[in-house]
Image (tube, rainbow, N blue to C red; front, top):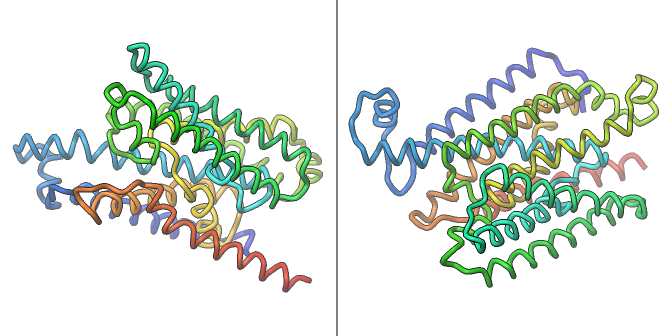
Length: 343
């Protein structure tokens, strides 16, 4: 894999991802149980067409949903890349390590408790609850990492944590008062539906500062990829750097879980696809690529979830698993092949 790709080739790939993102965004705005033509969508956005029903569908439902898919998909992909850098393993990801499931559990408990008290948990409350769950799961994973020296065992432990958290979440959701908790079951399965403009504002205020901080860490991240000793020789404070990676990854994955529920395989598959596309693992190039690629992947999967069996909607995790799991299997087979060739 090339470590120093030409800038021109990388910018060309960025343009390709941006064009694909724009195309999928437009397709998702037009498609659904009520189909809108591209000219109708453009006319509604420019104020040249007066159709109150179509305007509500476009402005209040589809547009915020598409924006959520782009931003949250990008955040989840970047979170996966940070975890892969931290653990130095391409299989590490928020879903596999149980971090998303831990966030899902605490959000479900917080929602059930607040609604049981006659209160509605706000957007920042959801993010705080998800962040707490993500940090608890991450803390447990780090505790296990100190005892286990094989990454395969750590991954298995993460999967088991995810199963336990998901089982407890399903239990509390099943016995929750359905009259008080609207769409909690759909949220627990993973969905971008129901996103409002207020949610989009909160998502933007959480994700974009996190992405900026992540990008500012791209240089020490590149040094860390070459080994701890190399990074220390360049003046990187390894302890603070690791804490920053944990916090940023947890914030990004917590925001995704708070608003869309657990979404599988995006945090693993997309970073690997971007590394293969750009033929480099340099954070300076891969971080923006992961954000664009995550947006493309989630828009594509969300479009399928909404339209294939319309008006019935599939869980977004069901679709991301269908397309993401084969990528992970292919990645593991390639890695094993390279290991055998190197022996």
